Image (tube, rainbow, N blue to C red; front, side, top):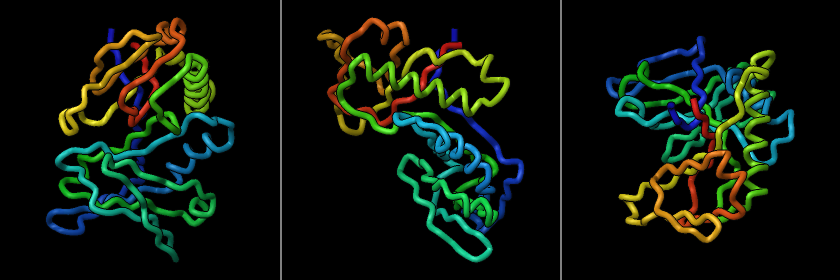
Length: 217
């Protein structure tokens, strides 16, 4: 039985790879591909979850800079140390056939774009009601992203995965407390749906950086 965090990868057929120097390359992707997925989030009411885009960090994929361009305009593309891309939801950029440009060091052909459904906000303490609402929103959003008719064949998520900052960097031992019972957890902590259904309260001594769906296959 394979347990995994749900990360949805996608590839743009129209991707353009252009060498800009001997050590860096620019990857240009149609904004439309991002827009179509963001539209699914924005046209429905998912108050607890969002879609996050990122470039998985490898030796061939370190972001140097980014931009969004049209024929007439150029805008900065924000990203963070984890190489999450903060793509705006903008119908005008779609109409103007915008491009998302990512400058990376290494071999751009080895890069990928990942899409992940995750909680909009993380915190130290959760009630069962909050966790059930979170899994409910994740299931609804994943159904919408799956589309017809495949959403009727998709299994519900199996729980939640909580990710924490690197323990080795800050020296913190991560502790989870469920209904008063404390235990040490790893950098990625999985809570199954069955456990969520049984608990009343969950807390951590360190705030998770990401809360995402967990599937069991």
